[in-house]
Each structure stands twice: as structure tokens, then as C-alpha cells.
Image 1 (cartoon, rainbow, N blue to C red):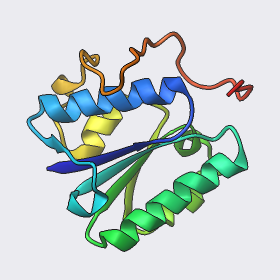
Image 2 (image 1 turned 180 degrees about the vertical axis):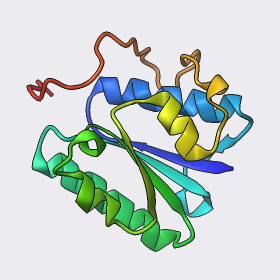
Image 3 (image 1 turned 120 degrees about the vertical axis):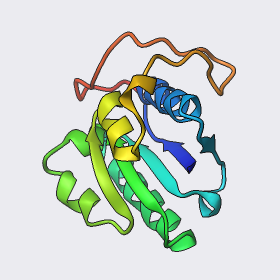
Image 4 (image 1 turned 60 degrees about the vertical axis):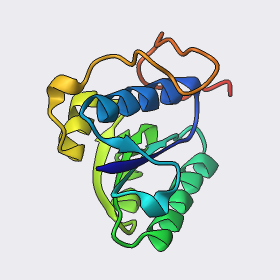
Amino acid sequence: MKLHLQTFGCRANHYDSERVRALVLSAGHEIVDDVSEADVAVFNSCAVTSEAERDVRKAVRRASARNPSLRSVVMGCAAALPASQPALRALPTVDHLVAGADIVAMANALGIDGRHAGPSAAQSSVRALLRVQDGCDEHCTF
């Protein structure tokens, strides 16, 4: 499987995306930068503002236009909000919503054995990320 990963929002979301990256790589799959080359796309969403949610929906629509055979998974804060879920489910190519950063649910959504769902040992940016909170208290300072 070739997976495209796009992250919106805070550093906690970036850490969660790195866990997804580690999950996919440890299961022997590939991460691709270009969504047109992907079989699956994961969008890690933010819900701190309506603009942040709009950006995620726009990215999913844009990806589906570039790759109509794409399967998409939306994870993160917006996917956890009951009020946002119908709009996210209605987007083209969206197969699954994963509330928050449930890595086992993400493994299931991707069809990967959950035993691969360990912590991220390597990260793709120059700054290391360390999980100090889980979830959002909806009072983001970013």
C-alpha cells in the first residue's frame, strides 16, 4: 500500500501523524508525497476553528479530484466531533473516520495488524515531538 499523509493543526497532531507514519512503515508499506501516487490518504484534522475544519474538507476534495480511486481516512479532532462527522463522511473517497489519535482504530481502518501500532522512533522533521497531552481542550494557543 502507498499512503499519503497530510497533517493539520497543532504539534500533538504532528506527533500523531508520525505514529501513523511509523505504523505504516513498520507494516512494510510506503509513504508517498504525491497524493496521485497513493492508494490511501490519511488526513489528520484540526477543529480549533471552523477555518481549520474547512481546510481539511478542501484538502480531501482536492485529493479525490487528483486521484478518484483514492481511499481516504480522516483522523484527529474534527473526526472526533459529532457535529463535524456527517460533513466529513459525505466527502468523496472518505471510507473511515478515526476519532482523535486512536492508533489501533487507525490500524484497523488501514487494514494493518494492530501489533505494528507502537510509538514512533523516527520523525520526519528536524524537531523532535514528544506527546505531553492527549486530545484537545478546545482552548488552543496556536
